[in-house]
Length: 359
Ligand SMILES: *Cc1c(COP(=O)(O)O)cnc(C)c1O
Image 1 (spheres, rainbow, N blue to C red):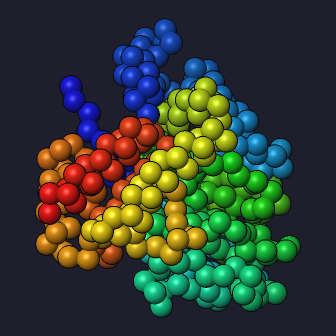
Image 2 (image 1 turned 90 degrees about the vertical axis):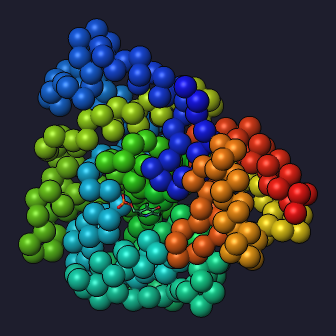
């Protein structure tokens, strides 16, 4: 067996300890004689997995009691529709465009009401976050929507928009559980698990109770109502059982490591290694405005497509895989999520320095 350093943006690297536990428990989960994939979602043993995962997440993040935790299917793209279908009561919402995922969310919302684009960084290929102090929030908006960490472009909001009484909805898919968070700042805080937490197939939605309502847009399917899943405690239908189980193992891994403060320290150390190198390199350059750099996704270029290609090929051969940038950006991108060990980033930086020296 040989594991590579996997810099994929998603699905992405998972902690090796978690994979080992899942492997050990695969054939016989805790004496049940079966795997988690084979058991009834209504069984006592699965009920324990679900409730433990929820409780651990609540403790880890410090989620207040007036917020519900939902484990949903349909990934990120389904949330792009669920948010407006459940929240657009007055018929309009504010969106800030900071990349592909924010744009897709805004486009989806247009099917349900008026979308006000109150900020955008499209003028500079999404290499920065618009000044949140300059935003004109619409007084009649049902919510303000942001994509907090932009997976493709490698930017992050270090400061949140002040939305007053209007709920802030944030897609935190690619920064989920990477640092401490004050949930009370959000109306909905949601993310797809497959970037930084678990397997594809689960979306984690943390939603303030007053936003879970009966009066959703007409025609909203039962499965796309937050209320359906909140009332049934994420067991309205068969949930993504195995995905929830693996997320639960990751929550335990994070708790054992010292929680989100410790995770943030590690992530800051890793990102600093890479950004410091990029800032000192004569060949490689980061593409994002310094103050908006993401801790999770680090895009960089050489400025020469042929050289980018050569670098990616040599890196792949050396065991640093999935470094190719998103097709809309080009160049390279290193996603250095929670489960990427510090050694992986150190080794990558050494490899880049060596590559540069040989040119
Ligand atoms: C990957 C990603 C999505 C899309 O998730 P799917 O589960 O593929 O629908 C949405 N938002 C962000 C920030 C992402 O990184």
